[in-house]
Length: 92
Image (cartoon, rainbow, N blue to C red; front, side):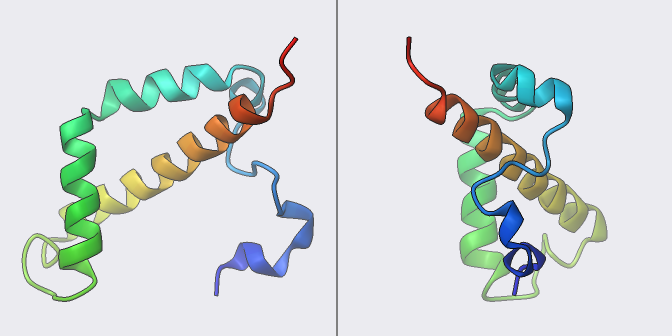
């Protein structure tokens, strides 16, 4: 179970964004897509969803690749939090 599930005060609240990222969430989106091409995101997600969950074969036998995928997942969660802020912002 996720540690976040043990903390109801975190529900529907960004917890990974810095103060600057909370103030400028579009910056997070732009930085994410500067780091990852869309085709690369699709391939990483496919690797994680299909290969990682079913086997221990390469590239998951390589510690550096595992670290790269863990970093991607962390960055994806930060992107989702920034997107949440953008989506829930009041339209004026």
